[in-house]
Image (cartoon, rainbow, N blue to C red; front, side):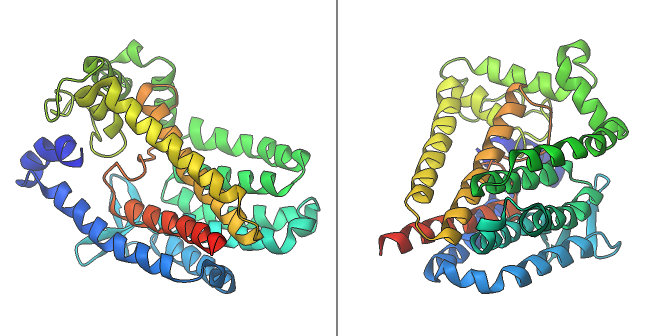
Length: 341
């Protein structure tokens, strides 16, 4: 699907139809050994390094904002360029936050209902991580990290009143980050009525819906998409599900959805049978992170959610995301194997 969705664009822009396919395979080749390495260690050893890992993540998030060090593209500064490859520190930050929060909750689960000792330290940490991500700017990743942390705090037994209070206090900030930022406000307006300006602000969403509708039950055939011919922007990244829907139809789209449902189900089973608290919270966090990304990506593709720029895990093109998603799954498999041994 990476090749099918990107080949025409890559051929015209980069003179190599397989450019994104070859890079994606390269990232897969890099990610699989890392995955095996993470599976080989005892995941419980990560607890010793939870704070240093988080500090490294925060340092990288700040470092990428420095001109000349971080790579800027389309007005965003989110990447390091290393040996011709891009590295997105916010993807590493997701894993770092999960490890830190899982360790924190494992140590202080009995105090999570206490505002000062259990709740506020995690909220403070979340603010430190999300602030540089917002400066990149990347609201979607910040919101997804915050949602996963809130899910973990809820599962650990945090007071609903505390969670609700933070949610209410964040509303003015969300208002400023959306309404006062023109391109984000445009996304909201496009979401509310994409067909009202299908050639303007609603272009991407309407093209996505046209792609999904054109596929019918069985699709127009692999490689036969019309929307990827420069109609649908980000066809191989954020909107790859729309191309799947066009080329493989409702059958192909539902297959992807069912696979993610099975992944979430199996991940939930691993978490349920994990007796060790650190592994339990870490597995819940991994399932919540990947499941949320998949749900949001599907929602955006069908027009049920505003465009947020979150790729489909394992399917969309993206090197850093693929590598760290593989590492996340390796941790999940590690937890499962350790519980069975």
